[in-house]
Length: 264
Image (cartoon, rainbow, N blue to C red; front, side):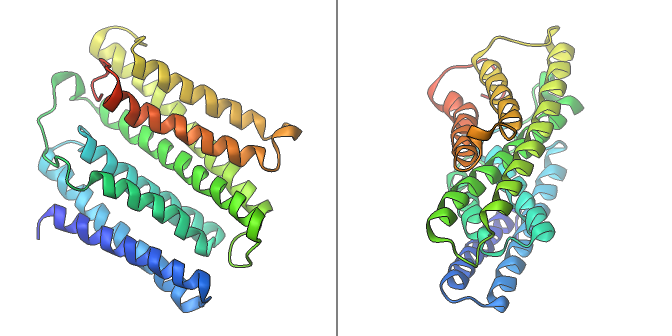
């Protein structure tokens, strides 16, 4: 078995978990819910093994092309979900989160999975730390997006199988805050990396500018939770909008526009 087969097997377990959560949503069963979470743990374990395997083969954190960043994004999102479910027992909410995870995996499957040699400017601990923190931050923002969608869904159906809106709001705020902290560290280390590699702290390339806009948007969200008019449906809507900005910064710029960022 090679490392990609581990990845495909992890994707199958994630898919089975989604189907189990869907079954649990229509026919509630504690056994099915626990089975779904067990499938996610199994998929995450296989994906972690695949990540470590690719890391050993490459000799560096393998996040240098679209396949590997989508892979790492998916892994980080699964990690975030496991954290929230272990802490808050959010149950059938996994249906929404893991559907998003499957979309990330779907975009990754079939793309170039090779492990290219690092260019000199990327061959540094700052690179690995910057990218890891970036996608961990993205994962929490993706989690906040899923919780925002779930909040609006719960507002309409008020299902006892899903967390109530008060808890969903709390989880949303926590996901935003944790993502913002990680993304702030990512920006700081990225500045150190840029200075070490090119002699300047910040470049006005389009990727750098949009990354700053992502940071600015979520800094505003950390403040918005204290403002009355953004409470209720406003905060979940901001979470959804913010993730759109994240996706444009991550995928839109690289696929639609030109940038001199080393990973664009």
